[in-house]
Length: 284
Length: 172
Image (cartoon, rainbow over all chains, first blue to last red; front, side):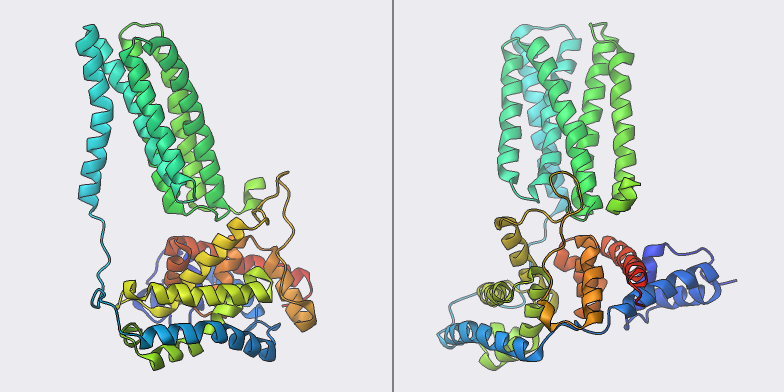
């Protein structure tokens, strides 16, 4: 039996196409493919596809290529050489360290923002209206909803239009908080909350997952976005659960059920997105 | 690269000579327009020059210049009237991107180009960078701003699909 007992994931096999694939992992893969007919066949097909392309573009005309390079050089080289010949401006000495984001700090800031967005309106509503005990929980959960949308839009920000979307979300969050202060919580908040849920909980993740399947959106952006969706759905479910437990008009089962279903749907979509479905697979 | 950043003209000329053809070829493949590819290649070098002090001395130069070229190409595609190549408004498959000038292609090369352009753009870009530009999966991931795992998946599916298309066209 091979040292690599189980078949590797299919996407590991292209490593063996690389001429420099001589590490330990690659050696294990080679041993396995040497013994496993199924992986051997898969690798053979990959090698055929790889070889079919040929070593270089057959359309390249060296003469045209050379002329193009000369034209590029004519514009670029004098400018850059002149800049290099000029006295060097003071600059950061090499090696330049890239600023490395500090995840712990980022998480702390994010949690602080979330806490402020959720806690401040809840506290204000409670203090101003002297609501019974279940109301602060409801206000907190409602205030959490728009804040939880931000990571979703943050994922979309990588594809452009991000600042506008983030500003829009912040504006919406502020509007929701203000409306809760003015006692409009029931009608306006319930309506806008449902709308937000529909848009950010269903449409955005679907677009992102489909985008990832076609390679338009990086898979890690989708992961982050879906984390936001999970937060959003969790917040919404919590809010509805609180309403139900408190005996308000929203029943627990009626509201919690769809949200749980939505979370299950997102999970399925996420898994499919992570596998990066090809369009033809998706159609099938 | 370190010598170039320090102002060494010869070092710049070495890098320029080594990478201009590749970058031009990469841009030409994905734009199908010689003049545009030249323009974008020029912009790539100028942008690289202005950003040279930010280059990480421990990083490799190749992926960095390809990343700049890829970003410029994407910016141009986003700004141009050519819409997304993934799906048209009615959900049907789009027309393939214009390939290189046909008069320069052999019959086989033309079939390969056609097959290549039938692939989803995400697969095609990975395959072109891997096969013709001889970049590793980690470097391609860096250029495309995605994970190495995602790049391997695209390579795997792309090569298999390419093989199937070429077989269907009577080539192997």
